[in-house]
Image 1 (cartoon, one colour):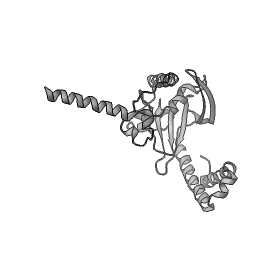
Image 2 (tube, rainbow, N blue to C red):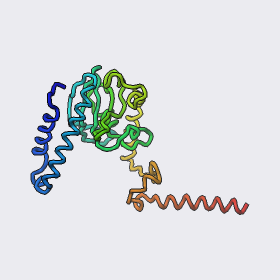
Image 3 (cartoon, one colour):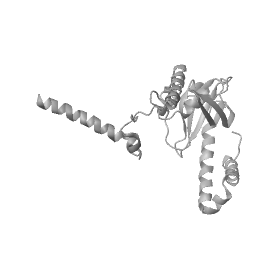
Image 4 (tube, rainbow, N blue to C red):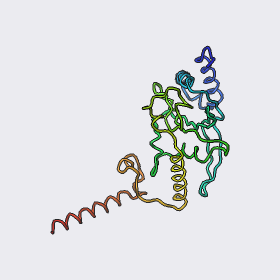
Length: 239
């Protein structure tokens, strides 16, 4: 917040990250102009994100890329949480950076599409850390936002948050967290039990881009359903 020139500050860190993190052999195969443009893009994006977060209520970044190992229903998971913040009420906010289109609707039981953040929030925090919220940090040019569930978003995240904002309308509750935990535990037990029903979550949409129909036998199920419908139709005709 005290930076006189945030753009130059970010640019320095982006260049340093490219030197330290991009494998030299990979860098040699990439066009120099591509790397230059990518650094410029990231500098603009990160600078805009810092400006977005500068209007937040006071907070402290506790950890980034926090590694955790958890056991769940007999399964062991090695996790890496993008970021954990301490909010102004001493609760913690679990943040996961995303550059694509994401929504907390993907967490909804009983058939959640994505349990990554609920898994982090429900099982990977330290015993002395009370959850204040879990959010995706959407890093999309022109569409920077937090989206998720926060217990008291207007008191701990953004002052003057509009009542009709998505964060205000989907405040985190203890019941919600319990539902997530129970759902995730059941998914783990089902996995260990080998449950693999032919039951796509959003058929036929789920199957449109899947090439594993032979393995899951969804077409056999459809034939059975169609045969059953035909038999019922024939019975009605005979009547």
